[in-house]
Image 1 (spheres, rainbow, N blue to C red):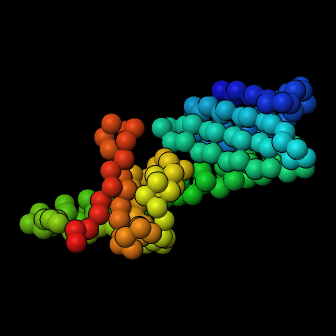
Image 2: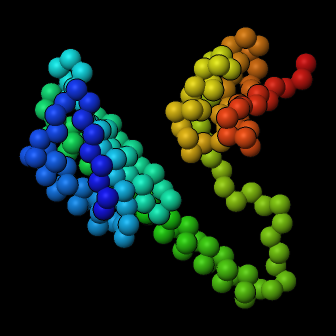
Image 3: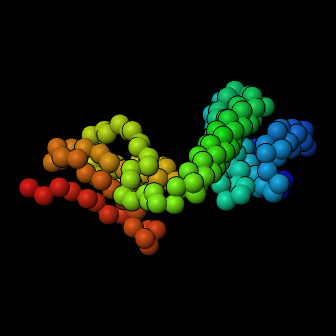
Length: 175
């Protein structure tokens, strides 16, 4: 695993460097090739550890703060490991489901799947301004859209990323 450790207003000692490397071994076992970008910083009395892991085209991120830097690093590793396990389980389940679907379609060649709803997602719609919705969508880079209640109009709106990757579109109902 390639590891880059950066300290902001904090000197990275050999002990901290070794500790981070040793802890990231827990993450490394899940991937053949992975990169970790670790930023350690101090703000007032808090020690903040921020770890980004990139592997197999997937990105994982954890940020925690604690009075002790080592505790903050431990929390980040636990969070990342949970995210990775969840993603891996989800991917395995999808692979299993898709293989069952392939098997079913192979046994019945006449059956065709057209215009079928294959996934349902549930989420909470919160009242906010369109500008706040853009900020909320920026917090979640894996999401392409966000549905919300426009405070100004009281109607359900959707904000979505445009293909240029920089701008956003707003979908409003007429009348």
